[in-house]
Image 1 (tube, rainbow, N blue to C red):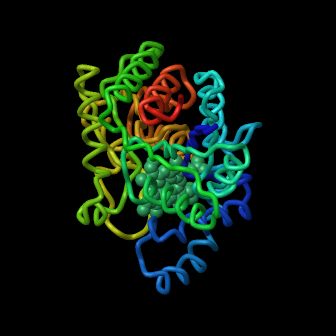
Image 2 (tube, rainbow, N blue to C red; image 1 turned 180 degrees about the vertical axis):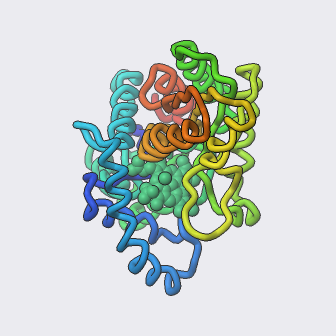
Length: 322
Ligand SMILES: C=CC1=C(C)c2cc3[nH]c(cc4nc(cc5[nH]c(cc1n2)c(C)c5CCC(=O)O)C(CCC(=O)O)=C4C)c(C)c3C=C
Ligand SMILES: [Fe+2]
Ligand SMILES: [Fe+2]
């Protein structure tokens, strides 16, 4: 008897909001050559020196502001999506989740699925837009774990879903629901995507184009402008723009005083959405003269999200669920 499983994969997060845990997490994350594409011989001294000496304390402070009783929001939301999804397959598919960096690791969950008798596994990184720094490295990591197994499961991978009608419909429904609940009508809706070095686009990474296409399809679906920005600049290289913080600071002087910000590239709320947009982004906008600011939640484990993931997963598991 064969048995199918789906492994939801997200980025990863520290174990606790303290400097030591954040340091361990950042050391693993930022040592990934898919993330920082500088030769390791040059990069490691910079990482182990200035970056890991200063950033963990600052980031731990930010994490402490978003941490919940159940843990880091990224882990809490990803786990909740996996739990809700499990109920949609009537026990015919095992649904599990893992993190590319930190815990639960991809290797540990692949091993656990193997022990549970799952011999057909769909790897599903929850990144709607393909990016080598997120999607590719998740598959690299899984391949490395598979490379150490004697009895490997059969593997399928979830393609990016940036333009999938089911994803656009989920975003549209979630956005309409959240806009209707606001006590104001935004002058502008912003879609803030995580940034990337511009160089990666020039070398052929489709992330930028796929982000723009998601926003264009959202404009079509919502019948209103969706202004694209890129957040979370890191390092000295030129990153994709326009930068979310710069745009938020400058909008009030252009007469735009009420905004709503959505983050469609993040499947789950996390440090980058709750703290960077919801706290610092709001402060930037209000300090610049803005009046009303709303951060719209990610799809997380909402009804819209679970319907979307069930749809995508059923399609990819065709022929495996009998
Ligand atoms: C959704 C897509 C993401 C892309 C693309 C991405 C690229 C990328 N990120 C960094 C550096 C950092 N990112 C950090 C946090 C973080 N990044 C993503 C997603 C993408 N990153 C998420 C979901 C999170 C949140 C994790 C959480 O625990 O909530 C951080 C850590 C926080 C901090 O210290 O600021 C860093 C650093 C680079 C360099 C990069 C591409 C080159
Ligand atoms: Fe990031
Ligand atoms: Fe950030």
